[in-house]
Length: 119
Image (tube, helix red, strand yellow):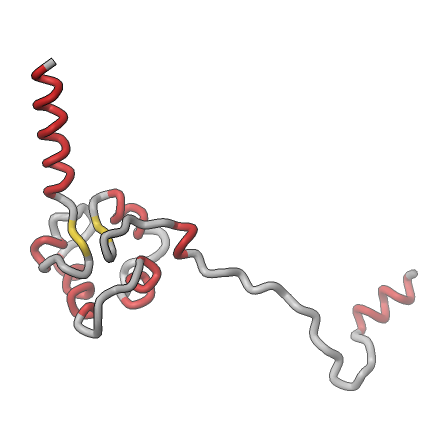
């Protein structure tokens, strides 16, 4: 029982030791996160000079080398942004709905004419 408790406490400390927030961590601290090397940590620190990252979407947008593909992996490895883990739903850009184009000359498009001719 005590062994399990000690193992659990050590595991929690080990997980927290790898955690780094993109807004606060030094280059060295960022490099403790699996997947972040010297190049990427430098990009994060340089982008942060313009101001803190608001969220994961802001980080992905401002730092080259971090995209939708590796952001979840970095989050799982311990990187946070403004104290938050990566949330794919919150960072996914909204898909623009397609709207029909208005005819330039008031005439229906060729596609619309074919559809009405077929009917």
